[in-house]
Image 1 (cartoon, rainbow, N blue to C red):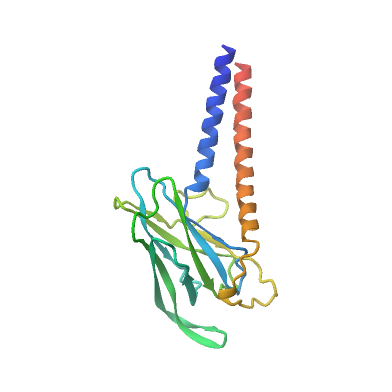
Image 2 (image 1 turned 90 degrees about the vertical axis):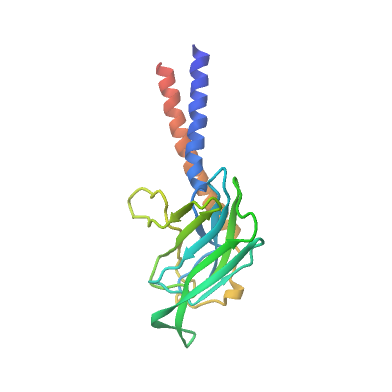
Length: 229
């Protein structure tokens, strides 16, 4: 009987690990290489996991926030994919480096030339962008993921402060304070990726620690119940 209880505890604990770990990898997300400072330029990665077992992702469309238009957006070539940058006219021109800009990027579309993102894998799509707004703490993008079986997943739901994460959250890029206090823009070709690994590792560590804490909590409860039984 005691061995049966131990086996049951092990099964429940393993299930808890799987359930709590999966969401961390399930969403289309965006993160900066290093920091995305207000008023500057940054290189960011849109990370796209394939959630299906029997279909591949063959298209990604990312809509850029119209309330914070970005005049400069450059995609980095991704083997096996073709990128298309779409621009739109601005109601109010932007002034960047003394020049007036009357259009900004509204959308970037990546289309697979071959098999795309296959089951059990993910792909990163790097983009250099700027000038980042100085009056916002984050940029929210809307992403549409298309599979080769014609199924479409829309990652467009904004995260509301103090509420649970929506089922299909829109990718959000956190902006940091300008390092020089003036929001000076950096050359996008020299966007500093030093510390990108550190920040990424830190974020992964934080997510891992949070998940581990929740798993241990559940395991503790299960063991306690098993002990009483």
